[in-house]
Length: 471
Image (cartoon, rainbow, N blue to C red):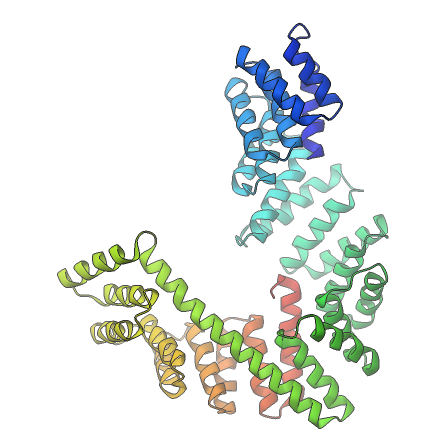
């Protein structure tokens, strides 16, 4: 918000002093009486609706009140009047960025840079807009954000916030060495900022530098961070260096903060295994297994719900089902039958959904998607034997279908067929190396008594989660 005020303040100097409303608005803006400034500039705008200085000053007053959508309207009006002024595009971008219009903000900052390539603040804010999109779910923007921060750095070498964000994007794009370098520089520039030490510690943990991670995470704790992730990673690092007493303190604090997190129970099981407490090992391993199974059950349900939503796209559910039924009657095919089944699933009619998926399979016996959905429905009914058959058939049809491979592993695990689960998770991992698969493989290995391998897979998944920020 301060950047908007600073960037527009220069426009206020050209206001026409003869206009009382403008003069009163400028005085209110200067004294930070933003509601009064908005009132006076609105009055002035009625008399001079195309005055760039009034529009600019009204925009800054609205932004100061965090009325960013209204501020953006003023900056858009300015751009229509003066399209080649970089400051107007920059201010519009800031207003959009502050109101979560991140993709539009990106375009505004890019336009400011096209007009004025040396606009240093626009370069920083372009990077911020890209990062906001990446953190909002568009992960393809993370690499672009890292490049934008790198480009902004020469003009702002001592800005700890810029370096922090740059380090964050480097960590998320797999450049651990670069992230470590930048986080260390952030700590040098801002040694009293707890988050700088915390994220440096997480990155050191991710790189397997346990002793360095301990130093950084301990400093973060000393400076006031005391959330689940601090205790989880600090406890995990202490476990790695065999400081079992301190590890127990932090892992149990993490479990007390978030008892539903499966990972902390896996680590507690490893801790008590090292301490020789078989009863606590069994308890923590059971909690890990139970919470992971619950998590998988939720993910299966979400997978079906998302698929159903995509089948209908948008609009009224009954109308959507009616339209799909008419299309299917006119021309029966597997895709229509599958989409109609998913629509009935969203409507809560599992039986009808199952019948339609069976029809889809009859029309296209090798359709891996249909087989996977049938497996998910069987798992929902707790028929894991049948679910596993469907998932295995899906992977035979499409060997690259990682979700079906993973689901087959979960079904085998829930049937306590651990060697089969391990094989299916290992096969899934060969297709897609991600933390969810590694942690499931760790679960199966632990129940098969292969504890060292389980710990190795779990820690690999943990490092991946630290890199990607996944929960």
